[in-house]
Length: 481
Image (cartoon, rainbow, N blue to C red; front, top):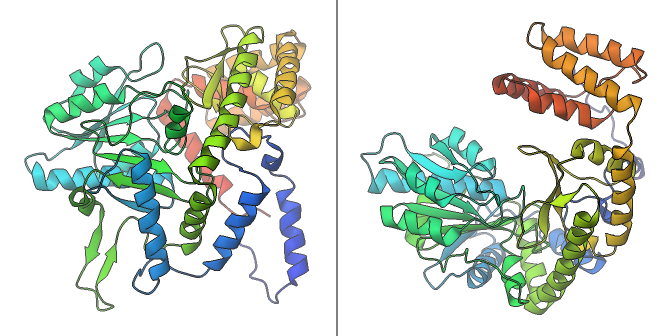
């Protein structure tokens, strides 16, 4: 479907009114209702980020010679990050558009490093826990580096023995998380990096979530395992500025132990009629706004500001974790080191719990293997702890109550699981919609998220699931009237 290109322009007021109306349907992150996606440090930081971004709204980081201001900001950001994350005078880094680009660059660098230093390797491999970020899978697909997954222990941290056994003659890179996003626990980086060092391969710490949080958590006296560039064997580390540094999106940092290693990240083409084309990372044109905003917020808050905010966030996270554990049927998974954790249950359907929380205007990500709900606690949540815990109690009580709707949904899931094995997907959808309508579901299956997620998670063929999600993604990114 197409949308006619506007024949005449609309007024500024009309356009902004339409945009505000569209935003009214978004999750209310400003009120602390989202436990992912947004990191909010308050109005004063917001105002600074907006003003700093506007100052460099049009500047382009593609050519640092034309904009030495951006070169100054980026070099100082990476130098400050290096001092925070165990770097030294040899450390070199780049500001990227986000954690995904940082992780892509870590894998691309490892591949090109191996091409120079291990030319006998024709089918490079990397080792990562099953809890590693999907951006590594994207990198595997983009750069032709096979991803080998190792299991996690009972505490959801990477299993060191499995990592050791997974190393082959083709291994070029090992990976650990600090923390892993799903459950908020830090992998045993020191032990994993020692294996990498023993075999003479690279090791990347994915600290995209914790890089600008864990150092301050440690300074406040909490126990934090070693994870950064000071650990022997760690050769690179990533940390997202737009997460716990509270910078504007999208901004992340990737740091390398040496400038020589970072050279493998870079791209240069010398034979273009338009001139020599160098690029430090994936992007060509690079917006100056996120770089400027990140520099501004790091200097505005400083160590004292981040320590004060981290103290409040950790206290809020601990209160939330205690409240979860005190709620019958619920528990915090493992023992997370910082303010990211997952809610699980041995007796409740946590997807139904998420639906009940959605009714109360809370947004929590649904996770799988095992079913859990994700919680990223940041500064924007420090004043909503009591309200959330009250609603969590009400929601869990609602889920515990047996209902005809729950029984009907469970029956529909079982029926759908059977039908998808023998009928085309479109037929199953029509049949399920009809059955849902007859059972009072309003003619749409599912009326809530829990049944659909249960169906998706139980599909026997993960290839079918991938195709379903590709169809969904395709549909969500097409214009519909």
